Length: 114
Image (cartoon, helix red, strand yellow):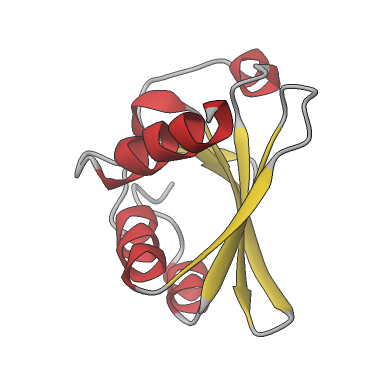
């Protein structure tokens, strides 16, 4: 079992030029983000590790964000982002220890509450 996301998947999301983040809390809110934030998030996902972590039920939490990576109109991957840097990618749980994924989650929550 690999400790990091597969290299092919990491390379694919590195090609993203924007992400679309949609929350699951029942209130429709999404946003599109581009630029350096996308690059930083792609690096955070690629360098993440598998923890001894959360149960699958935790990803049914209403504070999970579906973060879809795109290159133009092509969908590359979807990350299910939970707080504290935890996320699922292709059904496998990872955690980002750099703080980038957690900061991104916090920003999404702040923007949603405005």
